[in-house]
Image 1 (cartoon, rainbow, N blue to C red):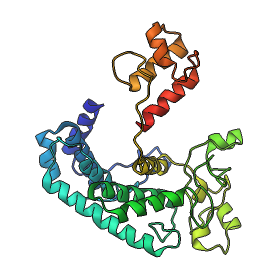
Image 2 (cartoon, helix red, strand yellow; image 1 turned 180 degrees about the vertical axis):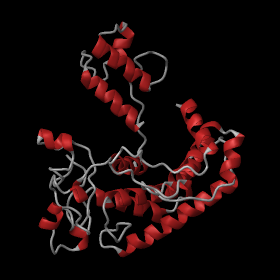
Image 3 (tube, rainbow, N blue to C red; image 1 turned 30 degrees about the horizontal axis):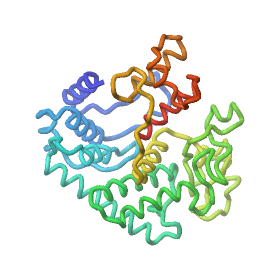
Image 4 (cartoon, rainbow, N blue to C red; image 1 turned 60 degrees about the horizontal axis):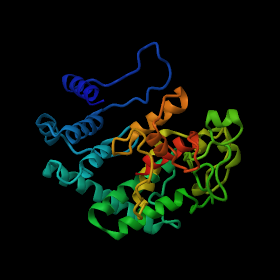
Length: 323
């Protein structure tokens, strides 16, 4: 992956004025962008974080600070890469301080908005994918709280998470399968085909513009903060997207205050660590009937029921996801 990333970055470096557009024979939307300076900033920050190499450092020092966490603006992903570098890694102090200043400035705005809104949420305008915007605000607040120790940031981040999980004007927990009231009919084709919502997906949420026929039909006259309908054809309020769910996962991780104990089992390949290679080894055993030694089998029986099956694999994957 790192070799591929270096090739991609070298291509960008050699083509400073290249803006991607779909080939002429592709007619679907290309999410057009007029500038990729934010993507380049993020890419360079990640390359420096991954390698510590001087070439990336020099490029990063010469770049303008970028912000944003959406499909058009992605600079804050670069700032997060810079600000969450582990102790002992070589940081660029000038770039670090600029990134921290930008994050604190945003966090202060979010706190101010949160304090003025009835449900303590960090936004006051509800556009398409508002739940992503709220999740992203929570991430900025949560990371700022970790770095600065500011309790106001932490509380606002928690309030954003609470909004997504049901403390909002609609009363919905916007994550499918959880809460007393949650989406049953997301605009998600696998769920629509099964006639049952798959669990664990964050839907787009309130959209005061009501940009589909179902929203217009069911939400006419509704106040801005209640413009959400649990209807499979309401793609402007009830759609599912990966980059809407990712800030929810990050925000949940930031909100985790208790230490998660190390799993007692799961070292299937017996290398002294529990990681993705153990999940692969267990999957090969289950799918391709590859042999496990007795010690490996004991490590694979995470549920301790003397059976090694898909439940053990699911538990191992879950442990890896939260560790």
